[in-house]
Length: 142
Image (cartoon, rainbow, N blue to C red; front, side, top):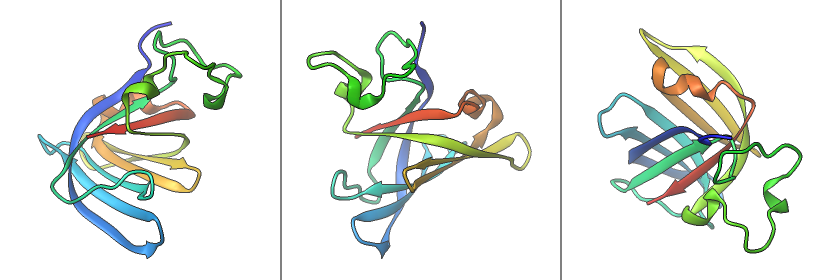
């Protein structure tokens, strides 16, 4: 049991590229203090974003409110009426962290795949090191 949150920050979207795929845009943005940057592929049929908007991003190890592990229970196995982290967020997906790279100075790079939609984070080691697990949930809201 415990806190499911591995990373939580607010980003300002600096670029939206919708040219390569139908229904998918590649977002780029920075945190307000500028220490972390991200690139995220997002399904625009489900969630649209524009340059200049602020989005809150949470990366969690589980959707359980008490932080308990999912074990063999997937996100689709949540019972009707059962409260989860997903209830308070607009866009939720499950993915695999597949690569870490050392960045410049005290920064690291994290790469996550959500069924082919990719997330790239670059920021301070101290903020991103909790992401050194296999599977995570990405939760986004404006």
